[in-house]
Length: 287
Picture 1 (spheres, helix red, strand yellow):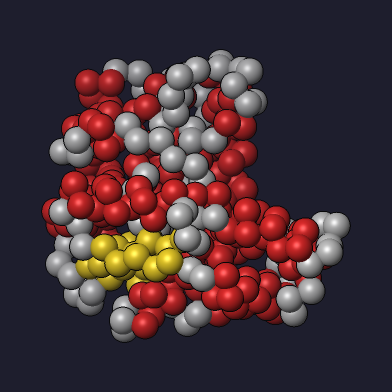
Picture 2 (picture 1 turned 30 degrees about the vertical axis):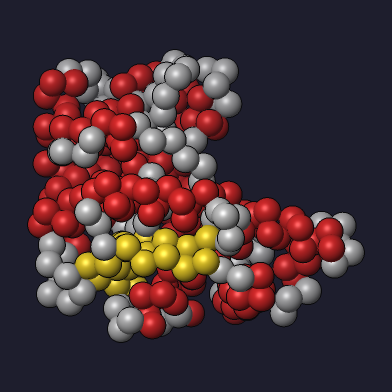
């Protein structure tokens, strides 16, 4: 899908008028979330970051039954931020503090699912998938089948340091090239990884940010409106404020889920404690 959108936009001038972009982007975001709404109660994977906060805010405005779920190992950043933002925004939230023995079970299930699907068990992907899997299990326990999550937002709105070659290049050409590469990675690697975990749990993941119309519009926006030396996802944060999210919440910075939940650090710690030289060896030893 993304190759077709890239070809469609090739040669077109970037959109640069923020006064026009922000309300139009708000419309696309709203429409995408609205299209994800069903009659059944749904879940949102929540961390308190801008992506999941936007999903929750829009779902609250236009949805019916929903619940937010946040996971993390003890004292993890995501649990603290999720609780703080949910309280300020009036979102219903359930937290799960994952004990070490439970983290082992989750990692084992993820590694098993990856092996069955012939997906590489590299530590980053296992950590990311473990966060998703833990949320899926929470929702499943309460009879919820569908879980919305923020997949794609970072690739659309320049949320990663590698989009600017680790803060070394801020040209339109460089950022846009890296954003497209990031989106293709989402399509080729990240979506299959996440769908593997969803199928293993007999659940369904929904990624509103990957709605085709939203992707097309977002990738038409001047990349210089998305990131600078001080801030990432600028235009998305501005649009969140336009949609009614308080500026202090829209401006929240957070680490990626695999770090914010503590899963990456847990894998590193267990690799060392169990005498492995590499995390891949530890993960392969789980199955």
